[in-house]
Length: 300
Image (cartoon, rainbow, N blue to C red):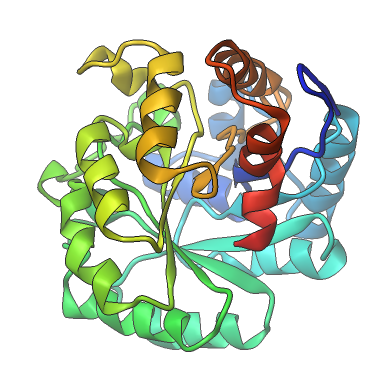
């Protein structure tokens, strides 16, 4: 891809894989036919066979010059959709699955999914599912991840806003008591061999996310989304965010992410453009840009 530093490879650490099963879940919660939900959203309804959505995403990544992407399920129990995609396109996708430790079947299902060798990340959303990341039920899943080198623990912290739920008039009964990155401190220390990723610079807990990274060298930040959390605190601009993150975390623990999700919008190129502009304006050199935009994710 052509960038302000010349041609560089770009990989995306944060893409949502909105499968047909995801739409089925929304329809069930809404108590409406899936076609009604699709029409209300104005989004394309994917085929029940996830391989077709995988093919669509590969074409989309090709169109934008993106080398690889971490694809994330958006409901627990949908791990087979991303596993299918990673099996078909192992050089393009890293499969991540949302897990809910409060589900009694979570450990068994996660163990089965990890045994495929294709699931590379477990995604924890404590506020969404109303548990603490230090909960023993979360530890049971972290134990499974830690037992498989190369598996990532993705932990959402901070403000959690699910636009699709708002558009459909569905309640979001999240609990922000479980959103602070500081809660992850003791956990990250307990699993030094496991790599943790906190998305969106901590999504409103930027200071706490930086403290966590400073104390735990196995914690990474992903840069995804519009980062609208900047409305809540200083800094209010992306340049300052990147400058402070690079100062505390260094260039090797930041992962570019777009938070892309639905079609027909597809891959959100505007996110990359804004982040490259910010990085260039603070004087980042090509070596650092290469690390943030691609190499760090490959090493992870």
